[in-house]
Image 1 (cartoon, rainbow, N blue to C red):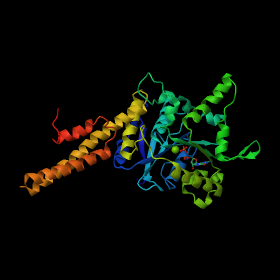
Image 2: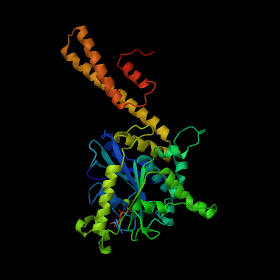
Image 3: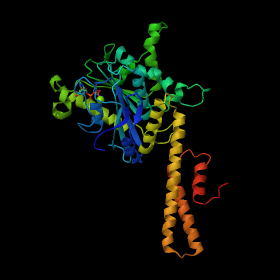
Image 4: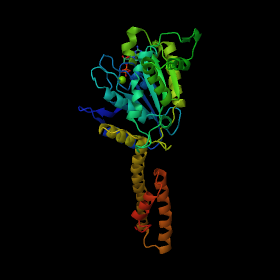
Length: 385
Ligand SMILES: Nc1nc2c(ncn2[C@@H]2O[C@H](COP(=O)(O)OP(=O)(O)O)[C@@H](O)[C@H]2O)c(=O)[nH]1
Ligand SMILES: [Mg+2]
């Protein structure tokens, strides 16, 4: 892909809609994907940072006016720069907290989709990690209501279940101008983040309110990292950052950006489903559609149901794939007719085994073997009962 495309658009009635053209791109990607999503307030340099991860100056549209450019969720699939056989999928999201929209439920939905689809979530904010910045990440406090792990009602979702399937978390602080000191001592970026997330003791309402988002971040994102980016360049250059010669960027900014990109490339995992199955581009597309449809229907997306839905789609496709392998092989055999029965029989044996392998490669969670049976019945290797 030489440029990003819209993956999930917002329709006029507020419904989220997966774009067919993006699904077609994902359908072609049969290798595992590492998915990096960025979220945060609008106009904080999110799209710019994603372009850097793509190794490009331009790509995701930057907003150089006050009105935010990105709507819904945009996607850019590139070859992973360090992991051969893997695709890096960058997801750039519409800015949260845009006053013009005035719809916080919509923001929560975008945030949840970013959490559900990514293996690394970058939260981008500007200035310092102060109380306001933490409060702006209020969406984390709603996660347990917006995502379910299991479908059954009896078992309450416990947060330790959640974290197993959640992305790792990077807080990117932009235009950071303070010195990083805690109690007068130099602090690393990670220490700075942990300090900002420290809980206060006490039981007053104020303390509880202060602690809630911090507790949620700590619980849901046990793997956390922070990068503090200085100002990128002189103020007069900011609006044309895309076309700026890299030499005009401050060397400190370049250093942090390079370190950030290296970290993301080396530490971001492949996206996995709830039971550890690696997500390919094709499955990611189906996953995006399932989650967006669920959210748009007003229901709560459920990780367990998503695995079941993915398994159904993939297993049906696996039956078709296996059938195609077998039937096209048998079709070819007709060219060499007449043949002795034993030759036909040995060819049949061989093709059904190759077809079964093709099926197995794609299928997952066919625990009771029903799809395998269906492959066998479709091709007459087993009689229907
Ligand atoms: N001050 C500052 N501006 C930036 C930075 N990165 C990008 N910008 C500029 O901020 C504006 C908005 O950037 P954009 O990436 O579109 O922000 P987004 O709305 O969060 O995606 C553009 O004019 C960028 O050139 C940064 O680190 N600091
Ligand atoms: Mg943007």
